[in-house]
Amino acid sequence: MQPLIVCDLFAGGGGYTAGAAQAGANVVLAVEADRDIARVHAANFPDHEVRVQTLGDNDDLEALAAELASRDRQLHLHGSPPCVRLSQVNQTNRDAEEGLRLVRWYLDLVERVRPRTFSMEQVPHPALKALLHERGIAFTVVDAIDYGVPQHRKRLIAGSPRIVAALEERRGSGPTVLPKDVLASLQPADRFMLVNGTTNQPIKVRDANGVRVTRGYRRMGDGEGGRDLHTPSHAVWSKPGRVYDAVSGQVVRRLTPSECALLQGCPVGFKLDERSVARSYKIVGNMIPPPLARCIVEAASC
Image (cartoon, rainbow, N blue to C red; front, top):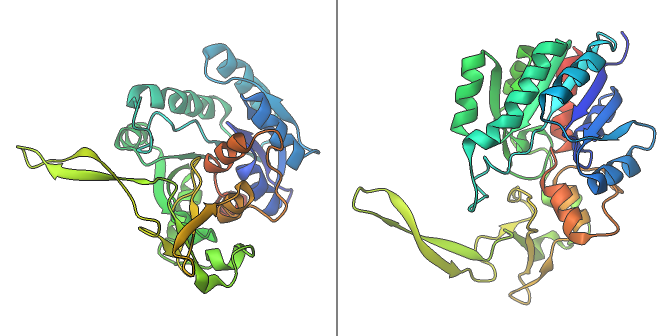
């Protein structure tokens, strides 16, 4: 059987492409709108076509659909539309309708291309689930820890039924990789803990209707909310976690971008942005974990 042909849209720094390559697929095209992020993607995959292109309008849809439909029928199409407007981490400008705009665009593209298989990664927002139910598209909500990633990270994966079924078979399988296994920089493992990237804890109270609402924030203590290295880490996002040293009783530093990448399941030596540490954290935080991507592509290949 020929290797699966993969197209990676909204590709970011290359998390899905890395997993697809590990699964033995041939990634023929990755499309990313941000030129600097695309540059990082290309640095990790110099033999792949990485195209800088903004996706989302009707002209893009028709032109790209025609291009992809002409490719090998073994095509697997993946998309990770930006989730910032749907994410609960976003406390400033969440907007479900705007957040679903590129999701709809991608699903319309899938309908036109009719690839052999397809997948999509997103945050598990109720409005997204309703849209997928409306369109009759299979989906499941997974935790990355069940797929060889040393962190708890819940994501909605939609796509071809065989892919969703394969992912659900592994739900609840538990950790196979933990932070102690990938963070060689933090040894001995029993000495350190990982603390979430935020330093503020919301103060919740119930309003007159009994609904819990935020009434302010308090500063968290150094080790508060920390997880030892024998426990899956918090979800990696663009604000890096911190390292708590049990000997000194203090937070001693932030996790480096490379350490965050390891917690995402990236291979050792995965290249990040040498020009901007902040961009490196963003690239890693927005990435689909490669081991999860590998499981998706392996299911698509069956």
